[in-house]
Image (cartoon, rainbow, N blue to C red):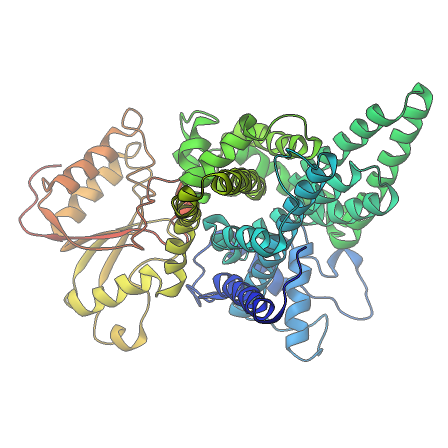
Length: 572
């Protein structure tokens, strides 16, 4: 690292502090969004599980002590949330805490935000590790010069900070931020293991892998990365066949034992209440594989694996510029000789392939791969920066132009994240819509809405609620095509309704016309005005991302549409 003296050193330190403050701000701004309402169903389930954590002293029944009675996820994030609340409540009543829903949610969101902050530093260390190793191999004509802490750290940290996926998951009290951190750490220690180190890295890998499995059992797939490195190291360093297998078995056994121990310590009820755990995982697996069909997986009907992720998930979670650069790095833009870059590719591929071919293709199923794709994108940027530096030193007249082009590219990388921050800098769109409803829709209005939303609108406002008494029909549109009774009911509601609410895209965007003709006919006529209604209000975050996979928008920034009757029912 180059020495920086005097004013330059002071300016550099100020810049780093500012960058860190931006990172913290991006993760914590609006962290209380949506409260006290349960806007995110997974977050709600985890918060409810934390509220159930009790353990009477002395312990009489081990199976009930801190049993969350919820096994879709492991106990580690639940215990971490409980421990955080216990500390904030003054270390009192451990085992018998009374925890409010808001406290449980905020503890989970703080964990996600802190994990996301730590992950930025881990990802920067991965890039530093790759850059330094490449320079050590060849001090001339290397693809990357030694990682420049001044510019390189700032560039990497800025892009990692302002990434849409990282900002969103930091605001969700779910497991995604933790899992992304653990997978990044596993990749980092696996890269160090490629250098020939063993004991220290294996213990850390076992510890982190155990925490990952204790967070979510599907994280077992993370273990393929260090196992791949064990095999790779043995193949490259040892010639005698019996020593190969002996060392491989020793490393694998040590790693597996550490993983098992830490998985048990931090998620013990997966083992203590094994039948409950298996039953929950069987149900979650059936939903993910499409064996059990539920209304919230209808968006995946007839979707094409891989293409769905490339068009409905990655462009929104990463932004198109990052996806293009990351794809370029994955497909060979960084060469194929560097073992650490190849390990990055393997880590992305080994996680992406099995999850891409599941029936349920939720955004969160891809989350651990997002940071690694971003690393490849930044390595491409660093490569471009080095080439620009070399070219501008020879052709000084191009120095400004090339520098401006690089700055424009970096701005394009962080622009999606800057836009995404606005979601948490402003009131939740459901609060905005509810305020408009109370002010603009007359008392005693008959309103047709949709069922199966985590929170119905208008959201209760005690001041305005005293002045407005709406008759809101939460109608089951999901079974409309199969139920003649619902079809008759809908026609009756349409004859009475003064307003129609569309709380999100969940219904009109998720049902293919050939399978749900009546449902699609209803929305086509509503949108075209043939039902006698016109749109009078629309509330959104202004991001134009409603075509993304559903869960990207419906939890924290759904688009809400309100239609008003302007004439009698024309046809249905």
